[in-house]
Figure 1 (cartoon, helix red, strand yellow):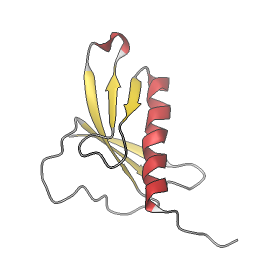
Figure 2 (cartoon, rainbow, N blue to C red; figure 1 turned 45 degrees about the horizontal axis):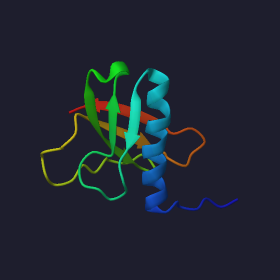
Figure 3 (cartoon, rainbow, N blue to C red; figure 1 turned 90 degrees about the horizontal axis):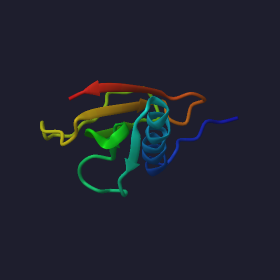
Figure 4 (cartoon, rainbow, N blue to C red; figure 1 turned 90 degrees about the vertical axis):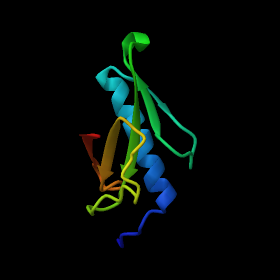
Length: 97
């Protein structure tokens, strides 16, 4: 069976929704933002909403350097990188800003 490349929007959405699926299992309330909105992709609140964090999710279909853009300012508290999206088991990584 030949391996087909997933469209970019599916890779992006799969990463965002995977993060929104996993974070509640760790005790966070996760809210995805609308597509193509500038800024963070996901807002998360702890139990009781005592603090809110902004996440930027980057999703890649293969293991490659992660493009963060040309601007050195990232308007999120955390960057979550999901690699090998579309594989049997993706590999997410958390990196503080």
